[in-house]
Image (cartoon, rainbow, N blue to C red; front, top):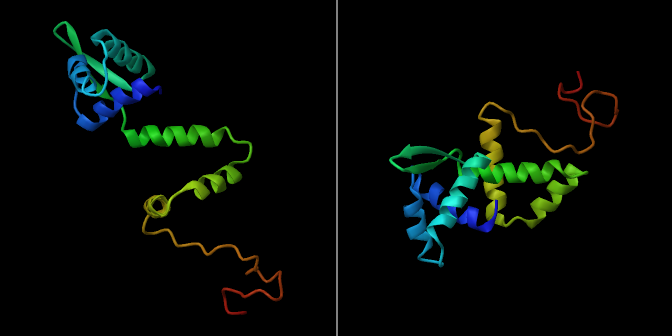
Length: 143
């Protein structure tokens, strides 16, 4: 999504209701000089790309987001990650770029996805609980 498309979608997501070209135009004009036809073209492009749906209202359209900004961000991350030839290394590098707040958000998200019934898995320490490694602790107490 280009910079102008993002600026338009930001308003559509923020307002969370069907919007007209005129509404988006008037809000964008507070930041930049932009023509009605430019905003109309951008919204039409977003419609063609599947980011907004539209419904006729008189001679104009009202546009509404098809999905959330969070879903868009997730799609971007998934697309970038899936293009990596080493997904684990890409994740490690991505985690290394995160702020503490972002890491907490990630931990919260993992807990939500795992749900309350998923037991926490201890990090793999290389010990074996199957009895194949004689020095490893066994879950059944050695019985």
